Length: 269
Length: 262
Image 1 (cartoon, one colour):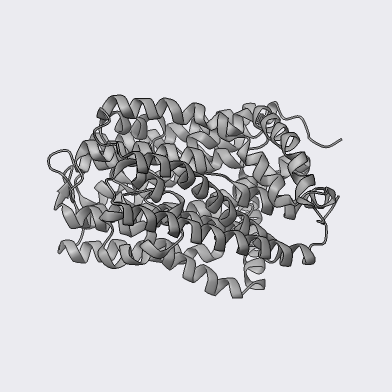
Image 2 (tube, one colour):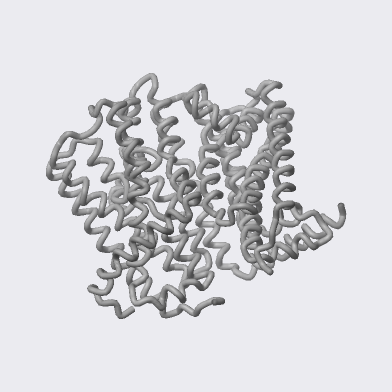
């Protein structure tokens, strides 16, 4: 774990190459994963049906289409499964092998997931074009500030999601119930990140709580940047919130990992 | 037959014992059940706060579908999934060989090899939701409707079980299967909505390709008394057809099984 930043940086191209090779080797699994994240399409069907005759709480049918397609794109680019991977590695003992490498596993896992992003953009980009074609771009933002802010926003959403799931995966050092917690995480995520419906539709009291939870910054914020007109103050607030939650979650994930790895005794070999 | 029952009761006892060994989980699971119930109900509450009916479904009627959904999910997570995860583990480690050696049908043995007894909470939650929905609706179901509703609940469970067995049979060819189950789980999640609220293309998929409609929507319609005889027969027939197909695929899979060990 005495990993100099320089050494990590030098290993990065190799780590990315390994990530690409893994993605290609497990292409069937990768495809299934992509299909699993297509739930926004199901929600798209549901909500356009609900809003067919009249707009629902200000959302017309075509606004729902834009919203859920944007959700699909952001989800494809930022989703990952590191919690499942990590707890599996702890349980099966393959973690021992990863610990022998002179690179912090956080970077190793992160690089392997980052390497999958180009493959996933093959899925996300056609959808983005379909989105532009179908809604004529009218439901999308044309504010250059928002479009510029989208890049750091997506990057932070990715890092926040990854750190959060890494922290959950690190719980495997302490608990055997990690899967149940990861599932509960997903339940909360679907509700408070805008995965199942735009956050504006939630009952006011619940929406107020959701505004402060980290889940919103994982998915909803980039989607809002893409589909909603925001003034400068709102934009700054959203990005600041994202930065704050990303920093906190990253710190917790690394601290949790440190505490956990001390307890680790390799199982099997 | 008594041999099967004896094996089942031993397996149930083992799972009960291990559940009792971690009694603290009782509290965790109870809290989780409540949290899941809230997460499950909230989207429905949002939809019906802005609409009186969606595609002909009123809020209490849609609640019944959610009740069925919660009950099927409880059985899925309490019995079907743990057993099949266990099976995948056995195939990967090679200990599935010992299952095949036993003088009992392998499918029966692996289908009920592990239980999560605390999921009983979810089942109770589902019952509470159904009762609440009928109180809201203001008229209780007729005895015949209850009978058909329960019967179709059982066939809905059978259809669910068949789909998961099909998925498990795939693990004889593609060993890394956990994410196939996640995919099925994600699709199953749509069973919380009455199938009629989806537009045409989606409805076709959920009725014929991945028949989540026969798991929750049609059984709920039976309990509500809005199902006609053709639909009831098709629901039960679809479930039996799925069971037969899954049994057939399972047998092909077993024949192709080459042990991971040795």
